[in-house]
Image 1 (cartoon, helix red, strand yellow):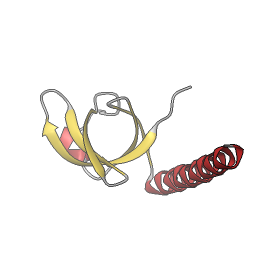
Image 2: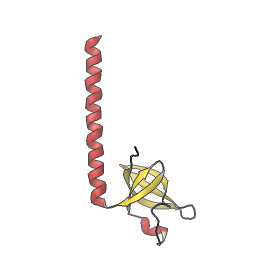
Image 3: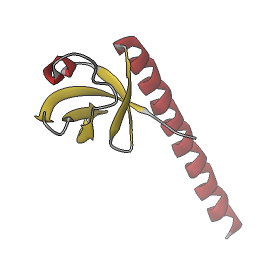
Image 4: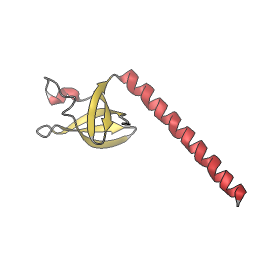
Length: 95
């Protein structure tokens, strides 16, 4: 299974190598945008949202889809934290 995380392209870092800086939940990373670059200047990608996977922008998405996906990921993270807290409590009671 492949998980793409929504990120917004905030700057072009190396146009010749098709590299851009993407912000994902407040963290900035350099990614390759060759997969989403169409017949347009690379600078046109600034502000665009994309699903990011292992250093590549895999597909474009709209801002609404990005927001919904990020919300679901946050909820999953909160659920995971709760599960871990329950497991820790269970281990403490068992010892």
